Length: 472
Image (cartoon, rainbow, N blue to C red; front, side, top):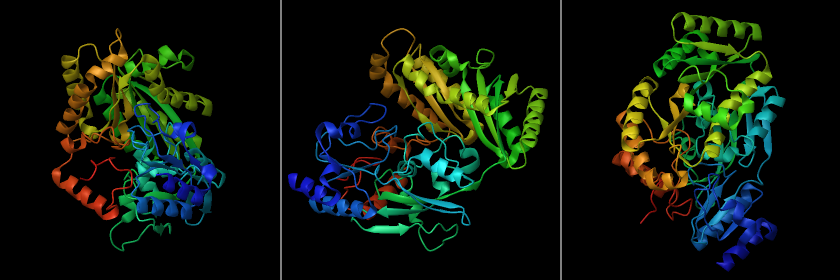
């Protein structure tokens, strides 16, 4: 293996091949659920260097683990514990290559931080709508590799819908330049859509061309308390009718989730959380004016009050107040950490079936594991729930997770399947969910996925053991 490390140092420079303590930050996932040990971490500075690294690893039959900002939630971007895998970090490749105002696109390298991309688009007079809690540290390559979602999917779609082209290094070390940025290209199989969401198992994204949108004249945020999940769904339907494409965010939070934020971050002053079992955060983007947007919101909420859908509501009066409301929503995950160890599920359900799913899952878990607490929040507008289970208030939360995680996750996933849902909405499969995939994906679909993997990566050197079980 020393000869491989020497070869890699010759490609990227010795300063960019990390080992031992220098590599430790790349070997543990963000949630601290997985701790690996790499042969080395290599940090190429160009697409040509990535290609050369892959060629060298392929020749030596050394596995590669591509890594962006390492903010993933399914342990899909850290090495195993064998000290035989090379972590290929794209963080040095962070350049904005071009902004094309007429084509309304931006081309960036894979290591570009999402927030940097947003700010660059804004400075050019455009909006790049992908927005995540980790946007200050996640990279666009990782966002595309996992087909990230976020808070504005209801209007703009997942990362896949925002991507018009990719530059990819294949498992053989060849470079495919698909960055043209075309909105129409019917010349065979859509390789871009195969690469996006493949979690680094089919190719290494080195750059991407992404859609830009006109900046709205105004964005407004409202917070509403609703008596039931059915009422939240009715409010969503009403918002679609009255706001149409202006509806850009529709977030759901249950009372317990907001109570955790209130307990651990009282300075955030969570509104209305004691009054009703659910609260909803809505966002509208308007291309006329703030007055027009406010009028639309007020008419929507007036209708919702008349129909008994909403018990109480506020419309943010300033940008700061809107940011404060979103900060509450984004602090739920941090409040869970403060409360103790918990079991996370990133699931999607047809929006119409979410109330019945939650009732069924809550009842099954309460019967199986008395005392569990439900932290239920997420993107109701696109059917994506973060259906998390907090340990009982008394007792050792770490021991609870160790003892009950497999049982609880099995119940949740079985209920998801019964309601026609997916066990991964926006986080991916990675390593953590790989053993569950065959239980909830059809054998035909799995066979097709394995055929695609074999065609793209016959040596199984790109992120092996992620998404699909290792070949052989």
